[in-house]
Image (tube, rainbow, N blue to C red; front, top):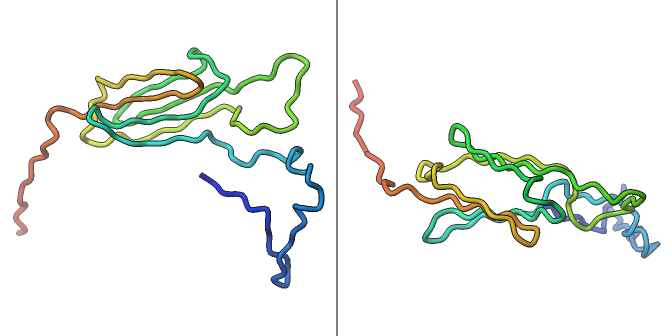
Length: 139
């Protein structure tokens, strides 16, 4: 997650508090995070990927697995007719992101659910997670 600081160093090393001159400036500046928030964790079922995509319907979101990679795509949220956002505290744009699946992932068992603006993708582990180790002789 990106952190945006209200402070900036001007030439000469002086700390600038210009952002505090007008307390309403924050309401009219562009949102700087250009991707939704997400988290990746695991439990006994496998890897859990959760992405915040509020304002979308299930038909606006696609999840695809191809060649050991999981791709999540979401359409942009369009404002209601006659309404334009001055600023938005949530990510409303189109989104595509691809993650490489680990060798222990079972792509055939991947499931996804969308509830309360959060898509949760569960990537189960394969039953056979033991890798064969073999010594290679150097000639």
